[in-house]
Length: 155
Image 1: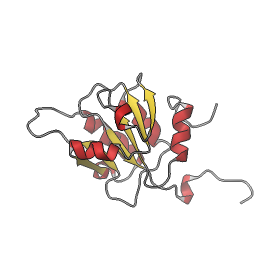
Image 2: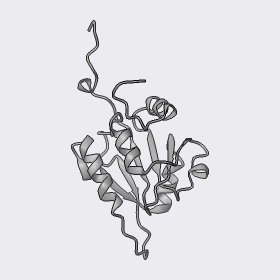
Image 3: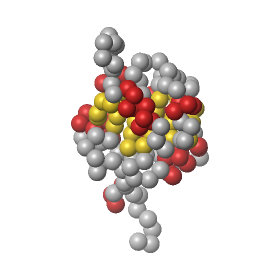
């Protein structure tokens, strides 16, 4: 057991988050996303029993968003002509605002097929059981600052 690590994060995901470097991206995918085919060159982690908000909140407790870019959080833009509501995006924005001072300003919408192209280059894809349409969210990792660390003895 570890202290201060969200319990829903499996060891394989903790390892992946630790391995990721500055500017690497992780996609938290909804249940409709083709995670396995899009993730051929990525690490795919199955978390089918969880929804995206729970996974997003857990990850952001230990994952810094990239401050070197204006919009380190990407959503799949609703296709033109589709009559789809995306209330889950408001939930995502509330969660991100808890961990990043930029809040909703972190977000960008990416055209569906451009989003797929970006997903193919993600370091990892977390496949959830999320049922909301357009429920995918991609995070770009930043760096930890000096004040993000716990004090180390002997410094």
